[in-house]
Image 1 (cartoon, rainbow, N blue to C red):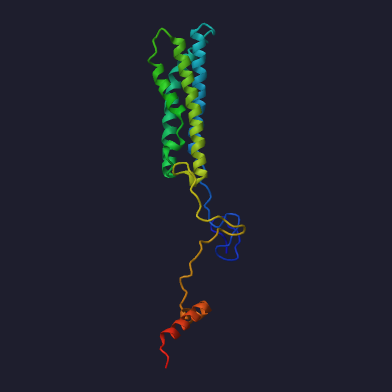
Image 2: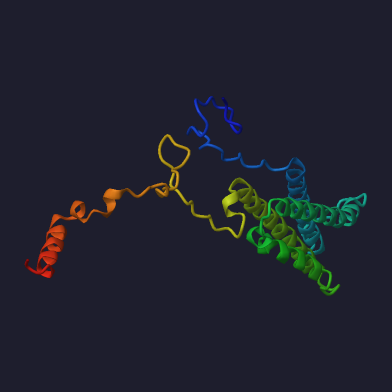
Length: 223
């Protein structure tokens, strides 16, 4: 017979082998989840670079290129980053919900901070265009870092299901023994039957029987 998990040849059911007798292999990261993550990180990096270029242009440190390329990217960049962030957030939520992983165990503060800074950057005065673009660049960098950390934490929870319910490993009831699937719990001998000899006090302790005989002689009146 073969193990249903790893396919190893077994001589008898329950035989210990490399997969410890039935631990299911960890789920592999979804391909679309990986694609959404790297798309978000790439667009955030491009958006941060574009924002820094625009900050340098407004500070008269760079000469803007001709052809309106910067203006076109300034319109398409935020829209693409927003779409990538929504896609990644929805896919990540579906993955962790499907594996019963607590969202608080994988969420990183940089994701919320980046999204908040990106929103607040639009509230800066028009007279401070350089600060506007610098803040947007910092927000995009934080967003990329938070997405990477969140994705890494969720991947670890997927690889170790014992920590998915709150991040604390659950203790094993038995310690595995070498060459075995795991130690079996000690069974109580519930099928013990009493025997007539069990009630014979002389078999337990001869002194008890002698004391019983002595008391009988004392209580029996002489003939």
